[in-house]
Image (cartoon, rainbow, N blue to C red; front, side, top):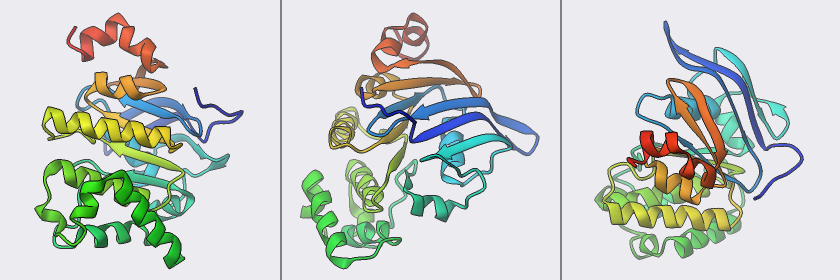
Length: 241
């Protein structure tokens, strides 16, 4: 399992409130460089809220978020992107009227160096050949699975140190979702550090090095992907077994 002396991301005692409603309570997770960590749980468990807190979209009420040894809890969302925390949002949110290639270029808006950006676009096309075939096509005319690949590719164009994936299988046909998880596994194999939020617990834990189970805003269980897949409570609650 990929590991290092200190985690790339370390979250401790994290609380998040929406007005008077507490969405996260005392959450603590770690992600090491090169790991794929899955965060699973039912709807409303707080999974997406945690990603939004990490990327700076929502403000933490309490606790610490350390990235590469630095406390970033007070950093703005755009500053976190420049540090290398890049979120691929739920429901894809591609720029529909723009071409596939323009969407990818927008992912590199914080970067400089046209030659390197062009090379990274070609690497993205190599990872997702269907995007290369449709590079001039309006993103809004792609299928759901193709839009998900584009959203991931756009995230990769920011050159992330930590890629946050929010429900990448949402709304996809089972065979397309399986292909999406295969691509995420390929990214892990290429050394991309990933925090994956997913309601499809079995598929997420199958490709994960480690996982956390969130219940009503708190971490209920943690362990390796294999350990959680074999855990009787997880199997009954999330795998339908």
